[in-house]
Image (cartoon, rainbow, N blue to C red; front, side):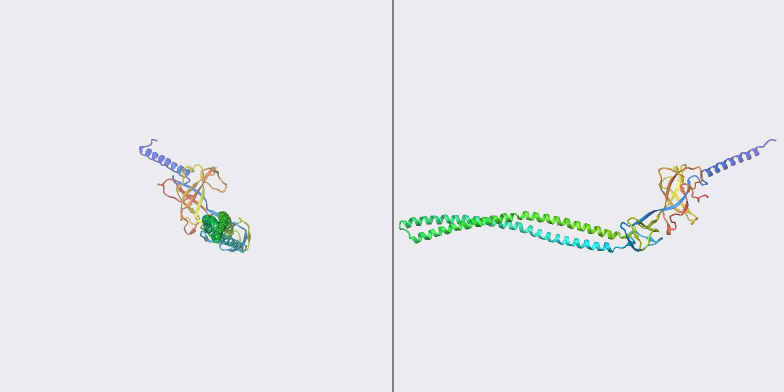
Length: 369
């Protein structure tokens, strides 16, 4: 029985349709039921957890937050008993104030010395000059008086002058000699005073060294005060960043040790979905690619996300990770950071599916089950 041209045409069309359908089916299977340009992954929503602990041991006096509370950076979370530390702060403050008073007095004395020493030296030097001038004058007077005494003695011997005139001249000479002796004694004292005044520079240097030592004592006392004040400040535990309290490990009245975890904080505005991409598909994924996250709680409300992290090394597939192909052995951890988390609907621990688009012209579709 022969086949007509019309029948041959229908048979050829059927074969083409079958081949096209097979290719489409093969493409659908190879890409996990998604169009080429999309990658489907799943994982759990996570956040950057911050464990809050105290730097110093103590008894919890106030606990100002509970699980689920929204906190802002710098907000007071816990207050530890600070009675003893407050007393130590007061003690350190008084010690500092005492040293500070000594420093102020020493600086005042030093300032006086800096003015007094040069003036004293100048006055002593002037006195030395003055006595040297007195000596020179006394010597001149003595020379004249000696000459007069000699002349009147010669005149008296010739009866050309009275004995009284001679004696008076002798007396003036004696007085002039005593004036020289007095002036020289005064010069000696003035020179000693000048030398004593010059020692003022050494006293000034010693006072400066004393002031420097007091300054250091003051700085040490202030450092001790700051250290105790810092300890007092650290007994009030504040939030290191904005976030939500997810875990509380302690209660009022408990005595905690240094570094013991007290609270756990997570920033719900910085959540990400940690997923695992099979080795055969990781080459399609790159940083800054857009993604959409779907959760069972909000199946019709996808959340926009962005690829922000791709591991540089592959890992063996953990047992809890589900992949479309169970033969997949190597996977790459990838983090999809949420662009926003309106009303903080998403929280750490929620399972979710995601679609990563690596071709811009491909339309978004929901994850395939």
